[in-house]
Image (cartoon, rainbow, N blue to C red; front, side):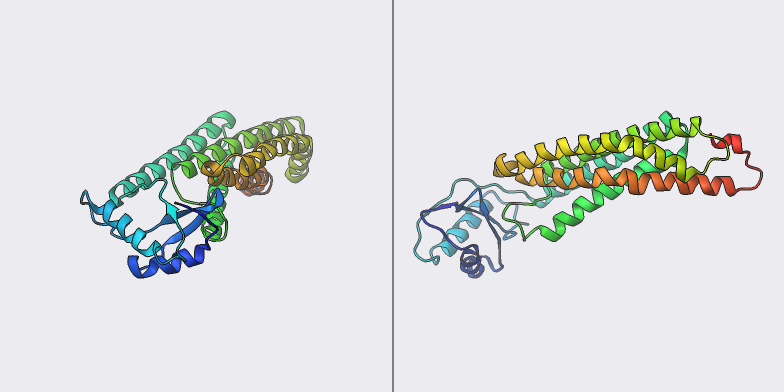
Length: 267
């Protein structure tokens, strides 16, 4: 809805509370004159006139907002059945992506520790984005709804993180092949990371600049998506170095410590 003058979101929330029986979520949308109101009032009512009743209650509450004139630009409804269906399909999509990543890395490097390290790093990236969304949901001036755009951002970050992981893993594998049998795994991995560090910084920095441009100038509708991508690029850049690679080193140490394991098998 668009008002004819600046209205405090707190005033709108307080005015709608008596009509809706709860405090709705009220945020600015694009500019200070446009507000987005989200409420769960009558969410379980599946009748055809439910949306009209909710809008009538909202308009009833808005009459108490300092006598300001307003115009409802658009409205939409997401029922519980649709929400559950979206949630279920989103979970399926992310789980299938994780399994696909595990299978791809395992097939490419022929070692389970590489696949497990990459998968753990991707899970970390996903959980960090969801955590930041939950913490900052009501603290930012734009919407952080968990919707199709959010799932698209998650899958995009999964692909970005895996790409960075594969490049670093390739260099680590080459470093182990070129090293002596008794070489310290930490030194070998550290050398490989030094070779790929500049590439990681340049690639992540370039993507980060593009995402920042989208965040500030891309418009209100994709601001939540851009924010998720921003967090994902940052976490995806460090998760390979600080999570996936250390997992490989630890796994190799455990394997070398097993009695009867030949050194050549570790190449």
